[in-house]
Length: 170
Image (cartoon, rainbow, N blue to C red; front, side, top):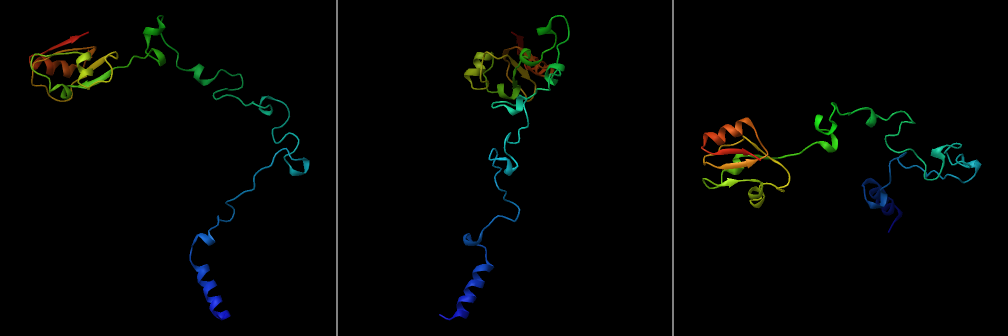
C-alpha cells in the first residue's frame, strides 16, 4: 500500500463522526475541585468552608426553611381563624376530603336499589368506604334509586328526585 492511499484513508476517517473520534465540546469538562490538599491548591486548610459557624462543621448546614432565627414563612402564614381552631377553617391536617362520584357512574344499578358507600366500594366505583362520598350531577340517571352519601350537589339531588329516587345524607 502506498503512502498516498494511507493519507486518503486517514482523511476519510476524520471526516465522519464515529466512536473513535467522539469527544466533549471545548469547555464542557472541568477538573474536579480537590479541597483540603494544601495551601497552594487554593482550596486548602478550611477547604472553602470559611472559618467557624454551622456550615463549616461536618454534618452542618441549615435545614430547609430555616431563616437565620427569623420566624420562618411556614410559621408566619396559614393560621386558623376563629375560636374553635379545628372546626373554623379546614386547613392542613384538619382538612376533610371526599370522594366524588358522578351520577353517570350510578346508571347500572337496578331500580329501587339502595346505593351506599359499601355498595359503591363493592362495585369498584370508590376505593374506600371509610372516606366520605359526595354525589355530583354529571350525567343522567333514569332509574329510581335510594342513594346514601355524605353530600350531594344541588344538580345531583334534583336529578335523583326527578327520576323518582331519594337522596339521603348519612
